[in-house]
Length: 280
Image (cartoon, rainbow, N blue to C red; front, top):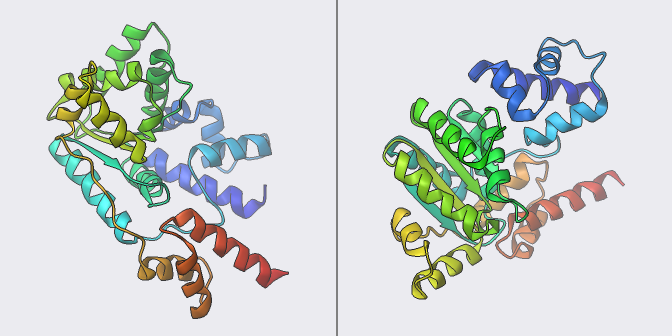
């Protein structure tokens, strides 16, 4: 890894340690406190490139991309701040590529001391789900399932205005999704929750409510019986993203917008292609 990239990783980790602690970040990154100390104190000789890449990926550092506060970024941030300050639960169910995850990661870094962010996985059991939440909270993740649940809830109780972001929640199986009821019942009014997924999340919950499946009505009630939809991607959004990431040509920006089909992943792909052509 290039020295300039290592410096970027070190600077970001230093800022996050200052906002939380070295011990917190070590548990969150699943590395030793010695590694964290070496990174932030510029003692890099014994740190392998593989370790640098692990830290980079777990901190969601993208060397080639600049995040831009487009309309949906501002909208999602508003809902996150509202849920966090009021201790309520909100849910977003919308198509991929609407800036959900990018906003969540940015918000998490700005609120590292009391915000927990996880990207859900289909392979998780209840126990591995709770272990992932505790790791993301910078806490010990050993013990039986009930011990993990109690430790996680107790930790959230100890924080001021905590926030939990469950990204790609549509991937959670029913037993894991059911745990939200335990979180909510113990933490309602104290902890904010953002539950986010693609359109399939809303369809699944509404179908479960319609067919009176166990837990679905309770889940739907706890998110205010509403799923939030985000705005469509605008030409102004794409223009801001293109310019921030090195594309100034107006014709190219218009092409990228017309080609994106309301998906910012396609915007990035076309920006990357354009930049490759410029250096060929």
